[in-house]
Amino acid sequence: MNVGRIVASVKIENAIDLSKALTCDALVDTGASLMVLPSAWKERLGKLEFLTEIEVETATQERVAAEVCGPVRIQIEGFRAILNEVAFVDMKSERGEYEPLIGYIVLEQSLAGVDMISHRLVHLKHFDLKCLVDVAKIQPNRPSDQLDSHELRFNHPNKVAGLHLPQTKTSIYRD
Image (cartoon, rainbow, N blue to C red; front, side, top):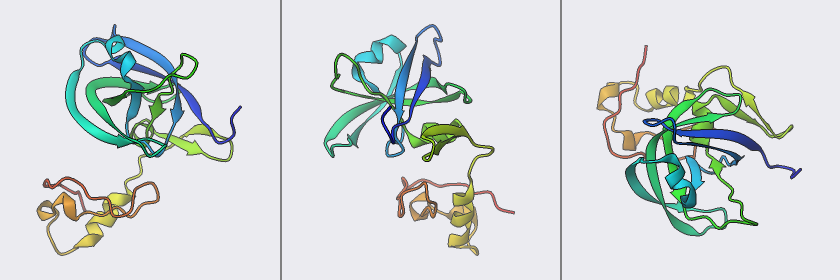
């Protein structure tokens, strides 16, 4: 057992063709955002829509290209299934094995929390929407439909402080 590492079994299916699927053990990585798979596995999920290419930074601070594709159905064993995207990255195999990653977006949508004391995933009872309350506090007198998302700043321990979002209009529900 590696102290500090949490590994979970994950099933990933092509959301259009459920016969195209894979199951693997993946490392929980709260520094990653998406489900990250090796490019070598891409064909196992069949035809997925290519959404975009992004630059990602690895744990070794190397910058590499990743292909974001979807839609896929992701289910961490014991947690709710979600529809999302995956990032395919050229990974180096160690002893013929790859190390896929479960990112924080997948964890949050699956209602899976990280218990760092017992090194396991735990069930969350609800989605955390506190960041939306903080957004509404930015400019309380300004109608929420006039806020540009690039003005939003998350004030939440699970978010990166000062995160800049793409410049699109965002709706925020307030009482």
